[in-house]
Amino acid sequence: MTAAATAAAMPVAAAPGRFLGIAEDFSTGRGTYAEQGSVFASVTGEVHKVGDDQNLLEVLPERGLPDSCTPEVGSTVIARVVRMTLERAECIIVAIGETVLSEKFRGVIRKQDVRFFEVDKVGMVECFRVGDFVRAQVLALGDLRSYVLSTASSDSHGVILAKSQAGGMLEPVSWQLMRCSVSGALEMRKVAKPA
Image (cartoon, rainbow, N blue to C red; front, side):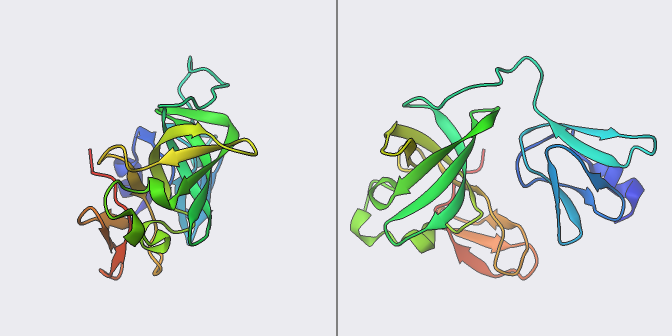
């Protein structure tokens, strides 16, 4: 993809993990990161090209949004999975609704809060992987300042953004399968219903 094609396809707004351009053509600024030769958004906000050559990419949260929000019971949040066990997925909450957080909060998705049916058959590694971005609802304030999260309360809750083992972005196929954009391989996840 050429720099002109990348610039033409560049989104005005981006969510975490959204492809913004090729690392050869752009440098990373606030709210972005480079991985495997590509530049991605690390926060939700507006995409800006800055600098004399317009080659520095930044993603900045919308102005006028409160800088300091805290999750409340019933809030819909976006969380990134940072650690997995057989019984739970530990997360960092990065946004509440559309508001990117300046302070990070810990969250946990317990096995019994993944879905309402066949709870005893839930395999956490079949639902989430480290690095996945998950839309979830806050159930309660847990212990040690971590929030208890649930993906069972709505079909729109679950994995919204993930990378495959091959390094490609995963695209939803069904409520429990995602397809790798590079290899075409299917991987299991608890998939959020696409909007």
